[in-house]
Image 1 (spheres, rainbow, N blue to C red):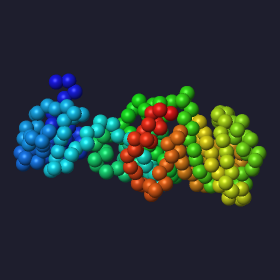
Image 2 (cartoon, rainbow, N blue to C red):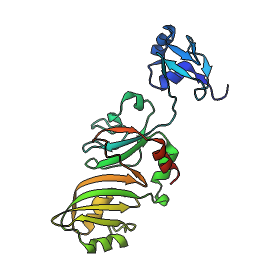
Image 3 (cartoon, one colour):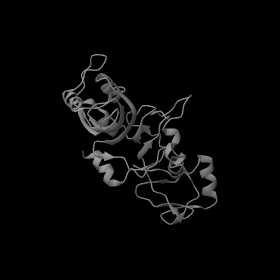
Image 4 (spheres, rainbow, N blue to C red):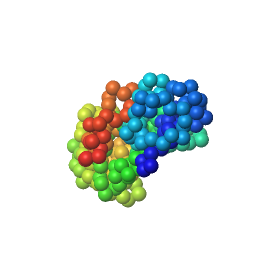
Length: 240
């Protein structure tokens, strides 16, 4: 019975209720497998091959999920915290059952693209330092960003702890006392974007991540909103 699972376990894992609740739904004849009503939860089936219906609606079986979120400020990039709200707290229960976690971190006061998944292998590949996956940010900067800053970022700047960053690609959108920029970096040190600008005597006042690699934030997502990745986006991540 390779690759088979109990019907009640499959439906419970998919968020259709507890084992006890699923048992009641089965007794009521509301579940079909390949067109036949099933009343015994102990029935073993291959969820990838069998067609499961609950109340006439097809159950799309999943084991791994990939979610794009437009993270708002004030929320931490963690799976659980007793004191403050996390990005996982924003998800509906039918996603929480998969135990997703954020891939990397965005600071509490940083907005923008955040990927959540339960695919540990992909998360590791995206975060592995040797992979140098580029991350694109948009920021407001207190202070005038100049061409000299572009050169410094291209060379890598030395942070307050003596660490020299990898080269960053800085683009000036607006240059005045409150500048606007885009920045591409290839590593993810703690508070890195903020610390890079502090190293050149300036301060980040607003920060938003726009992209990880070639995966760009869906700008139609409002702050706090999320959706599953479409196949094209998933291919971007897996085949980069």
